[in-house]
Length: 99
Image (cartoon, rainbow, N blue to C red):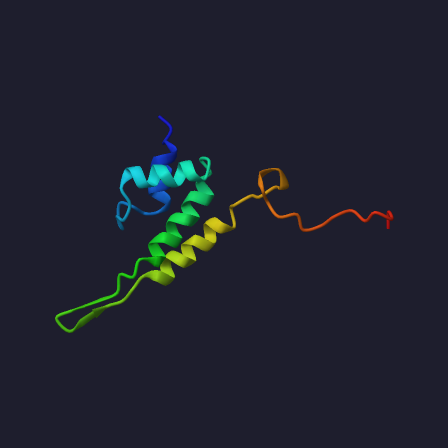
């Protein structure tokens, strides 16, 4: 049986090891990005990075893993495909004079 988009998103965001989102929130991420796993994964990593989880307990400082999530987000950012038909930015045009 093939994994669902939600299961793949959970895997991409490492929800088993670093739980942060509820299933409904992950589904909302998928829905808001039209089922695009790369975009949803990128946004999920950015949201995890934005959560400041550094803390001090009994004089012991636990570092934030913000850089980890930002690095992981960059891997998904590279997988995002944008085209002009889906709202992407057009970076080149044909010259009117034909040159």
